[in-house]
Image 1 (cartoon, one colour):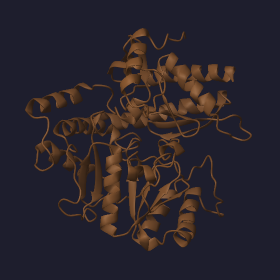
Image 2 (cartoon, helix red, strand yellow; image 1 turned 90 degrees about the horizontal axis):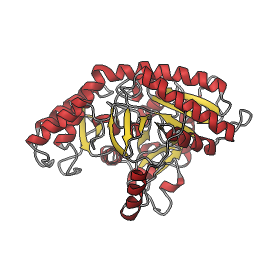
Image 3 (cartoon, rainbow, N blue to C red; image 1 turned 120 degrees about the vertical axis):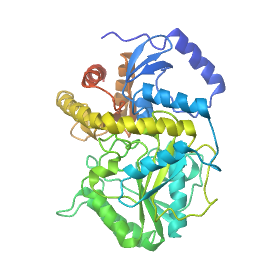
Image 4 (cartoon, helix red, strand yellow; image 1 turned 90 degrees about the vertical axis):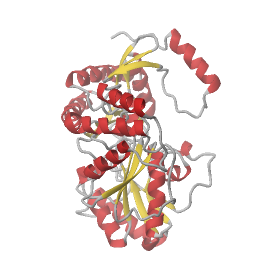
Length: 439
């Protein structure tokens, strides 16, 4: 497979213009300048075709420009584009009713509409403090919850997210996330590593740092995203739920990346058999239109009029896109994510047997992580090889993104077929083979 000549002349020109007027803070990877997309396929401004296995960081859940999503946006735009949250509109109510129906708890759900994942997290933090009248929280190393000041305080995946911004929000205490591939705490006999982490919270954090009756909430990604697509052991969430119930703490599930059908269920926490008190969502909920929500049990959403609000959250066009997205996910793409995701996991596990640089393959549905290592004796992360695989795949027509120390995430649109998965994984394996030969 011959590499493409990238970036092409039109892409180079646009990238140069970008450097002059756009903030350097954006974490650009390789020089991909998009022109248009359909489903899993995208084309750059020079006419080169790619398969998108990043999906805009798990955002375009129904694929690029799905006709039903486009039509819903167009129809709403012809009626009206915006009305602030001081008033009401039908799509807003319909979207809230849909979220109530699919919320991962039996109690009635009430939602607060936002524009992004970080806004959803900020809303959850504020609600948790208001409802419990407690100041403290627990977050997890490796977690990513956004970049605004409250959300970035919980974010603990890279030091660069904090550098230059101290002091951050007070009251956030971090603990290890239960990574079965890289455990750092010692488990007791008969205890899975998830239960070990929960015991550490109760015996160490609550005893030495933050009293249990001062903790408002525990904010956690059911499957870590930016931290490395890490799936916790089965004992983790049941133990965490018991801990929260014991001490009156709110369990807040950050579903921004893992939710909306990506794991074959509406919400990734449903894979672990517990109900949270609050979830935060965004990314894949409107197929790329800016929309998010903080969804809480009705008994928890106790703040009064005016205590929180925003201008654009629940925008009518975003809600129209969200309704079309949720219906598509429910009708066909959630099942497809489970089926094709399981198929991809099997292929990647077979691939791991033939490539010594792959240390671990993990995931649920279409949220899959492939971790690269230097050798199997030490399992030391190999971030340089990981980066080389990302670049080599791009040069051959596949868009991927790294995460964690040395992981590549496989998170394509939920509409990805087996044939498209085969094509993408063939490119992926060729990139691995070349990177290993050059190491």
